[in-house]
Image (cartoon, rainbow, N blue to C red; front, side, top):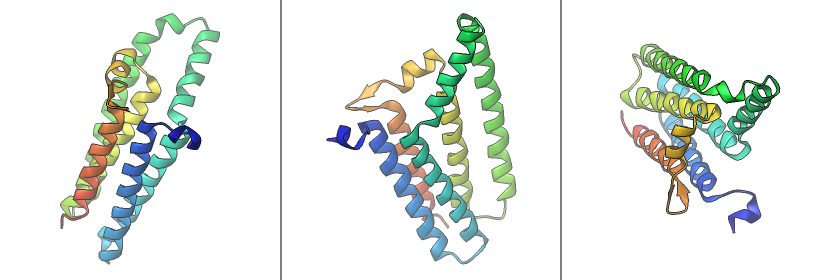
Length: 168
């Protein structure tokens, strides 16, 4: 049935999860006419962008483009160390972004800080998928039922975001 819509079970779970998180953030923004309200709107937009990413798959297109460039330059076989360096760099950037989010939102409620941190972590996951280190792909793309592990991770992150909207 999902094939008719051009999606798979993992994309379906991600779309529903991030869509639900975006709606929860919008509801939280509407209920709070404080500076937190603006933060919830930004978080809703970020979750909408995650939905778009899942449906369009820019991370896979970036990966394919990178592979094409490496193959054309004859460096595809040596990509392992480059991928590992990129992943460590992304981890450092994600930590810096999470720290920035927490510092920038230091007067915000714990819910906004938690949802912001989860959004940074999800962004890092998408970036790691774009780099596509085979050892990590083997973990992320294991099927649990009909859904890949990465889909369940997305759903868990969205559950935390939705729960954070109730945290005052």
